[in-house]
Amino acid sequence: MASIFTRIINGEIPAAKVYEDEQTLAFLDVAPASRGHTLVICKQELPTLLDLPPELLAAVSRTVQTVARAITESLKPDGLNIVQNNGTAAGQRVHHYHVHIIPRWEGDHAMSYWRPGESTPDELREVAAAISARLGEGDSA
Ligand code: AMP
Image (cartoon, rainbow, N blue to C red):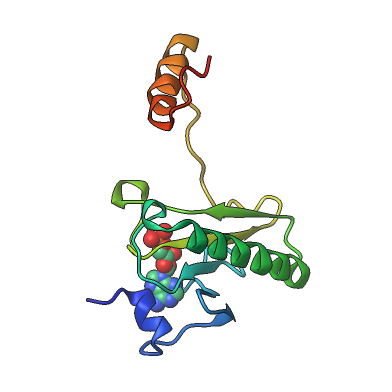
C-alpha cells in the first residue's frame, strides 16, 4: 500500500505544498510543532536514510536548505531544528523518508531534547572502534 506521502505526491490527499522539484517535495506538517513546520520528502518511496542512494540524499538535502532559507526569510524564526527519524523506535511514524524543518523562537518549548547521559572514555573508545571498524577506518583513538 502506498504511504500517505506517496498519496500526497499523487494528489490523492491534499497538502499545503511549498516547494517541488523532480525528486523532492516540501509541504507543511499537518500537526505542526511550530508555525511553518515543514516536511521535505523524496518522491521515491524509500523508508529510511539507509535506503537512499547518494544522489537522492543530496537532492533532499538541497531542498531542505532551500526551504529552510525561505522559512527564515519569510517567518523570521530565531533558529531551526532539522529532525529526521529512522525506524519506529526512533519515533518514525510515516515510513517514507522525510526531513522535518522546525522553525524555533526563543522560549517556544516546541521540542524536547534527549536526556544527556554519561559515559567513560573507555566506553566511548569501544563504541567508536566498533563503528569505525565497519568503515574501514581502524581505531579512531
Ligand atoms: P515522523 O514521526 O518523523 O514519521 O513524522 C511524520 C510526520 O508526518 C508527523 O509530524 C505528522 O504530523 C506528519 N503527517 C502525517 N500525515 C500527514 C499529512 N497527511 N500531511 C502532512 N503531514 C502529515
